[in-house]
Image (tube, rainbow, N blue to C red; front, side, top):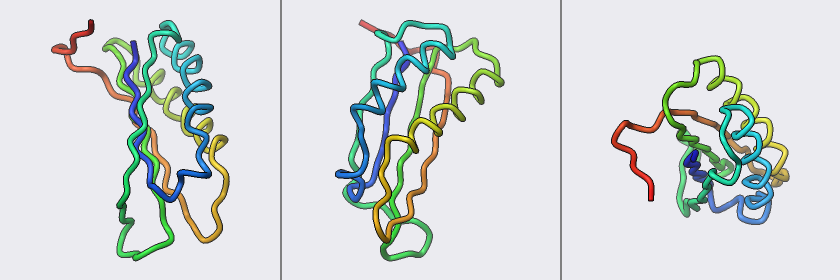
Length: 116
């Protein structure tokens, strides 16, 4: 049931294997937080504009947000964060002249979360 959102800079369109990342991430999430992979849902949001610091060009951003039901320990969340970040970097090819700032956040869904 994890809800996963990946925001990424447009400059990464051709170098980021998004589908491959999601298909590899789902079983990783399921195993780490003890859920079923078929319950994982990932959506990718392309950012046409992104800025890092005071740089005009040369940077891209990827942020993965994994929202899970409450009840996991901080250690499990940290383990998932590190594993997802490692997996992410394995699904991106380098782009000449581009530095990528990648991050992963694992957070708990609010009690008001409802599913259909």
